[in-house]
Image (cartoon, rainbow, N blue to C red; front, side):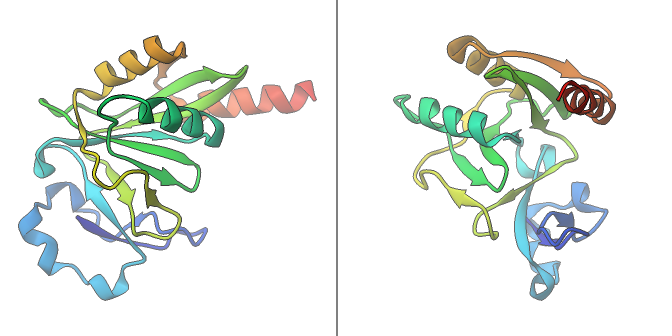
Length: 177
């Protein structure tokens, strides 16, 4: 785990250190927890393969929470200020990625948070567990997302230059108004 500090917008998302991807659980006692504005999982090999699907759309997040909650063994999920986090353990940790997902005729950003990333978790302000007794899904990020896409009929594609892609799409929507 890693303490978060407030970013420029006052949200508990900024990493406490730039060396977080080297930190293992034994380092938890070394952090200045008094400065913490929240906590985060360090993802990838240092945490035994922890990973996260970060859904940055409230509507898509609510739908996934409801639909995944209907499964016999729903995955460990947490609500975030912008949507939903789905927590996984990857058998072989993978690099992060960004998906452009079409949902209700709009483009939504979904991040596949893997090696070298962090995921803010409860009890950080604005984050709550959906079901505290649930467990992370044991699957690769991309395989689990493909399963969700098929099961919930979601069209998605991985984008490389995500900021430019989403900026173009936002600009096109604004011009169409």
